[in-house]
Image 1 (tube, rainbow, N blue to C red):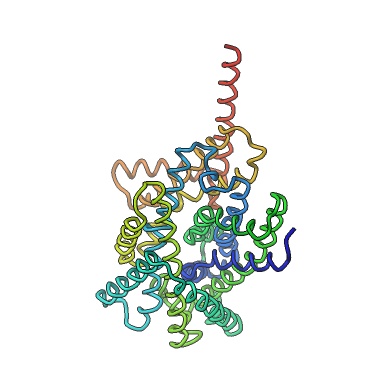
Image 2: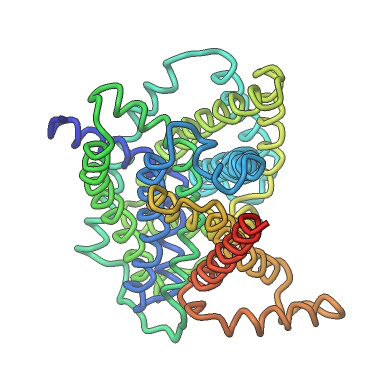
Length: 441
């Protein structure tokens, strides 16, 4: 059995894990874009930014104790490729560079401006120098800094949310926007917490079992209750900041993702608020970057049989290069990639929930194929918008767009559901026919 105290502590630990400081920049932009439609957008954002990550951790418990178990029912090769892509996404290609860019734009830009490019390069060199230093030399210093700054950040956020509710920046304006749930749903992809949850689930589950020695049923109950605590905390933060973004739509100008958050904080707490938030966000981002870099190093050290030091150095150099692009550029690049990855990850989460009842490997393969086809279509439409793509590629995109728009639930960002079910059934029937022919022969 387990104690209520352990459930509460684990709930707060899950909250801290999923609440990345870099994720703060997205809810205000979502609220700002949808105005009086913020509730639907908030629901979509919370499903992908909170619900799926926590479901991913629980589903990983059903899948097994190792990362490879999560998708090995499709095939061992697919599992290796999928895991590698996830590691690269939450590592040097997207998440780690964004921590550096976010730290600079929240901590430095409000005070010195964005035109001083040499300041950005100096800041990022120092930032990733610390990442490299703490990854190569084990030290508890950065962990202690994170434990101090995270509570301060939460206090600052609580003040921002309370001030924004009691004394709103402005009245929520009525905006003629459509597909608000889908907009929030897709914006939640940018947190990348579902992908991170899949990667770190085995570590979380081992930590829980090491303390409590739970059966599978008790583990599920424990995680369900702990997840409830995390969901409440994250929902309050995300919805609160998203609402404040909606109140700013008719008052403040939006010059970019981080700039909007800076403007909101300055409006509510003044320049001092920007300074405190900048320090806390930069420290929290640094802690996240160090943890992710160490994870990348450990993964590729084992997979490629190379030294941890080499992997970490390469990771830091690549992350630095991408970080120089800035937050908004990284978000634009990552959006189509995440739109491809997320349907596959979500389908695998649901399949692993019912892993004990789905014995056929063909069902896993078919469902993943269906999700991947839709994800790939959405990714291509993201990279090559119909309105601005000419020639042969433009014709192909228009055909894909027509097919995509005809799919059920696409208005909600759930176009992958029906194709996943259909392909799962098709692959199951094919396997059954093959097995019947083998028996007859």
